[in-house]
Length: 125
Image (cartoon, rainbow, N blue to C red; front, side, top):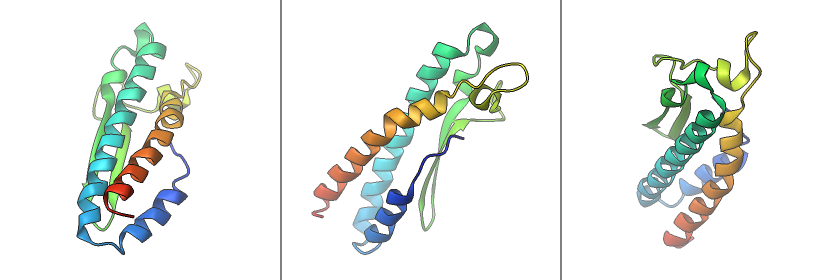
């Protein structure tokens, strides 16, 4: 899994708790869309870098959503799928890091910010 600074998202989640259940459904949709965007972008990057030796790697990248007191989106290689480990992302003794997920996050995070802003405007905030 690729990591990025989510401190602003956490601050936003605290603020959203103040505006009621309507925000939860709206933001769930925002993060579901953002997760799928990250998955698609990561897969595109992986297809460009995986080569013949990693032909199944792009198909191992999935998105999982969880809703409890938080909205959680996990995007990355599913270890239960062929070539679903992180050796492509972070490298191994056999290959250098590909950083497909990190590059995808760098591209997608600004779009997530715009989605959040649009959702907040829709909610009247």
